[in-house]
Length: 355
Ligand code: UD1
Image 1: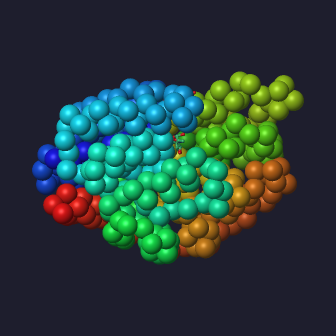
Image 2 (image 1 turned 30 degrees about the vertical axis):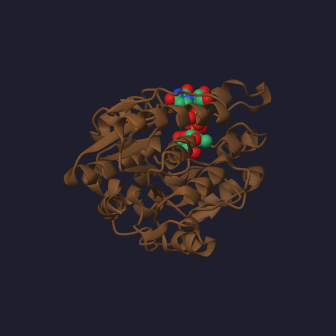
């Protein structure tokens, strides 16, 4: 028996393929921590990807990093003690990833880490702390890129390193046919043929920090309409902004899009402006130029390919219009595997379980 444990929107998306691949081979228990719970971040993603309800829902909800991680650790440990899996698969770098990996490691269950080996220079970033700790306790490290595999090798970790490619690519390829349709969400604010820039901002460092108004002003200075599907963290921050920092009329805030509509919007956008790692790769795969409003990225291959430009949030007012307007040439889209990551992860999980 293998457990797959996840809890946030991007993890549900990636878990959809990992669960499907593992279910071909034998019994699997899906454990959802409940870190994300709103319909837009949770139920809608389950529905669209046909994931089916989780076997266990831990219902941890929101809180400080300490509260959330502690609740996930405690509840995941209790669930794993009952289920008695022979391996636990975790994905990414969220508090759900850390809590579940630590619970498994403390119970001496082998951990398979999907999306291992990514690193940021900012060592105080919650996600970077999470991924370093999860990699340290994992038995199998599934790297999405050659660079991530090299990074893991350079750290001399105990787990075995496997170059699997990025499971997000598997998910995208599995839905490629549905992406030709227009965005279906009734909240979409523009006529179907109207060119636009798609923007998403959700990282705590940006959304809860002092540079958010500069990024919003940068978006307001773009020549095209900007559609901004707002994660709950951003929606809250927008309500609390001082009156001087209100949004320009070209910026249209809508609720978070479902998985398919988000990809349809990426593929139709003139450009994407984001701080999301997922969107950086999706824009890269779908051929849409991306501007990442961060000082660094965990996905530098997208920058090297010419698909992605970095603009520091504080410089967004000056640099964003130019970065969005500069044409990008076509690029090769092969840095993150071939769309068969989930099958490799299944084989690695089965092998880890049998050890
Ligand atoms: C989390 C991850 C981040 C990931 C992101 C994906 C951590 C440390 N961060 O960030 O790495 O990129 O998920 O989306 O694990 N909220 C709701 N409804 C929800 C969920 C959250 O309203 O369903 C609100 C709450 O006010 C909550 C805040 O959003 O306090 C932040 O949620 P949280 O899960 O703590 O982190 P994210 O910002 O979503």
